[in-house]
Image (spheres, rainbow, N blue to C red):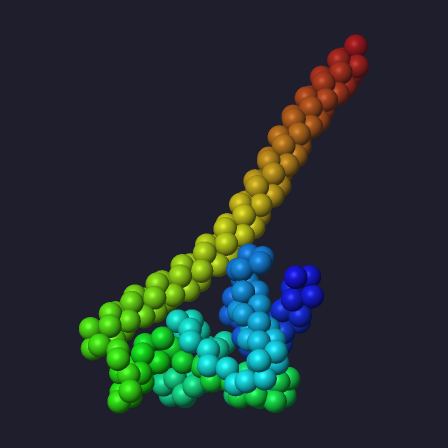
Length: 196
């Protein structure tokens, strides 16, 4: 697994799919897509066959998107797959795959089953978007927390400096009062000396 973690860290730093959008997850979760990817490649080599990958992962680190539409698997994935296996990589979202099965004249998939898969897929998409929004909110919270910590530190530093200024001012006032008292005593003593 260490080799996968090292490879994943290098790939994710460069934005190489799949899985780089999971780079903020904990370990080992952040490398789950890469583990699957490596298993797909290994299976294609062992079986000497093309691969059809069915997934509900809708993130852009798997899918090529253009003007808001999903075109298919990312070209980088297809290219890497072919260069490592000599085979073709196909990928479909579950809903799309079941829809294609439903269109096939040989398919025994009922319209109800297709509708159920679509509903489940939509729920998973919403859950994924919600999780991504939650991750973003957590990032913002951490940034705000750091900023508030910095502000708190600055305020404490400023209050400490103000306290030092206040203490120095009080010492100066006390010294000024002592100076005035000493001058008064000198004046009184000088007057006594003149009159004696």
